[in-house]
Length: 470
Image 1 (cartoon, rainbow, N blue to C red):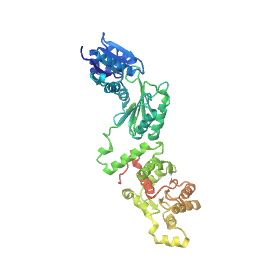
Image 2 (cartoon, rainbow, N blue to C red):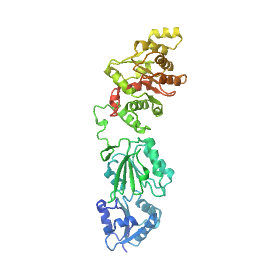
Image 3 (cartoon, rainbow, N blue to C red):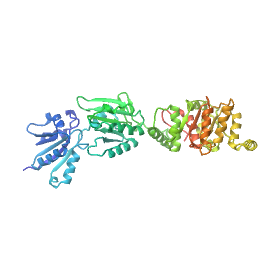
Image 4 (cartoon, one colour):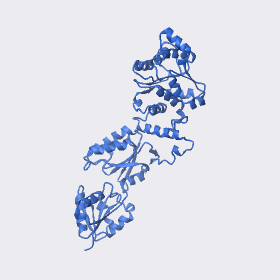
């Protein structure tokens, strides 16, 4: 009796053009072919006459596997077919696991032939969405507990993998894809491209393109593969493209190492923010703030009056502008290259002898005295407060009681006493004066300075290319 063996073969999407020559040769040499009824129908024309055919329905995978081993033990050459690639949610792992566990099967020769997987066909139809790191997740919980699947979904979303979704829905499983979308929306912008491929590679294929926010899970069935882009994936006409990095800033010799790190950091922050529909100037300053603090709560507590950052950019870059800070730490945090380039003068009055005299004479803090003097000498300045709530309170009171209307006010003092109140005063008193407030108790000198740095560098926001003055 001749020695039997098994070939586990991926037949691709089921069209002759996508069947590999190795798989075709295996079918021609087979004594028997075993597979799911639907797949057997797809390849019927490629199986030679006289070859035994064994087909069975869904959920009969183990039964088909044991039948294949039984036929091989009789000396047959058996081809076990799987749609797509046999090793991706196919028959290969089941066959190999059975052979590893059962002594009766260990002497049978077995090989695995690759096929074109559904996500590869879908990706090719869409363009090049999986050209960088990607993962594949099945939403079928028949053999994997949902808690495990959900944990994998969260990890893929947080790690910014391009993600292919297999078995996204069926008649009884309709809510899992809704949950996946919900989890991805926590880590990805709503504008993230999504590709939907039904029956990819077959005569009745349909290819749709949408975004994570607009994606409707109820339009998907079990014959569909869903591809979700990462933070850098974009649409160009009908093509969904995930850049490999050939045109990245790292290859631009004008970009320094420090700037390259900032670019990567800013793009990571942008990809992890809850929303991507902020006005460009506000978003730019918000990303700066999160970058400085490594604290994503600033997305919730950063509040800018409409167009504030854009207004400051226009006035600061026109030349000859003045910035007044409450403490020297804010002054030291401003980018020197930008200040020099735009001819901006920065004042901090704390060491001015008039400040000490006024504070003692009127029973106020030194930072209050600083603001009073500066408001008279530089009424058109941008006032930046990153430490002292009394300085911000003084500015708010000056705006409320008089015609004082500076270029703008950054209100970012930090602490526990009168901090929240000082920011509420500013918002109430500002009127038409542009302002930024870090709501609540958080803030600080570095935060106040980085907001101004964002205003000075707004030209770089569209290209997300910060750090020229690093």
